[in-house]
Image (cartoon, rainbow, N blue to C red; front, top):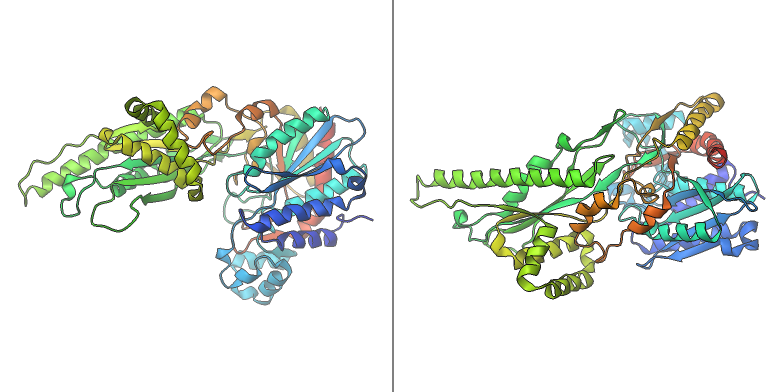
Length: 540
């Protein structure tokens, strides 16, 4: 008896998956991995081959699942990757209690359709949609991949299928990064040839109202550069005797926020400009001392640009801002002399990288002491999270080297997502061409090829497009690298799997109106996905 091969059974499985409130880091994120394992274990194939269905612990106590279906002695293998964590549900407001009850939430929305945004109402008039957190991103993709595994157990593919579904994609991708080693081990143990890594993240719109269906041959990359500004403390009654770090970070944000100089364009696809994700001073309590230390961090998307080039441009921008701050402070002090007679200070603001600051601290205090301090902070302040922990490590060095101040220090925090692309891979390009033709001929669906999936995905951890040498400016200036944050650098140099993303249709990821088009996703797309897998297994 087939479990997940028609629209209703797929919808039922999806609803069960959504009912787990698997917000990243929650207990339900752990529970859903066990549910997925249990559901797959019901398939006859895994009853006969229990060693091919595994649940793997991560270093932080979570779990990811692998389900491997062999076809005789075939080497050719397609890896299906997905994630089962979701973002939180605070945006649902009055509907929050139904965010993980997709059937009830959908019924409520249909009963109160006039309260929904116009675009949502238009969708509901045209086809069947299912609402709920994770319905689109990306438990529908996981549902469909579990259906493909069932097909594989029935011998429907001329090759092997390996399902890999992981936690933590919405935060730091710990699950996928730790799964890289497992993928390497399995390829060696079973003598596998990984033909492609196929993700089924849903189609993401490129602009409001975009109704196109996309197939992706890569996934965009992400850096999280930060600047720690170390000014000069003073009483608010004597502001010209110090430098307010909140002002310093505001000038950096003024320069970097939406700065299109950091955008890239490839074949008409453009990365979004950088935008601020964190900005705050580091005072722990209110006082009339000005904030003299502050931090700011930015989301920076990348495609082909090297880390070395980006690092150089960020340092150049910081130097430009430092000069502007110096002029601003001096000019305002000069203006104030019309009321108070004094000699304005002429500040010099230094610009360092984290590596520069680390070397200065070692020169002053010795390597053993600095290593001890950094290791102690990394080990004892994990509750802060990667961003604040990175900031604390930089702040500690800046405090030790305060004589070098005032200063701006460039550093990087996790997560780092390498850009990955198979847009120049003739094998993947051929499959994409064939799928575009198949979709139009068989289903009258127009698929558009995109080089990069813009929503960030775990495809980033299937290969390494930049050289290790080119990544040195990133890792040398990342306080947590090998100090609480392990990036699978060596493993990714070995893995090198071509990538492709073909997913279901949904709308409004990470919004309270998140929804899945049931008719397309569990109808047309459920027919297209096995065709894509077969082509990836057969094409040379």
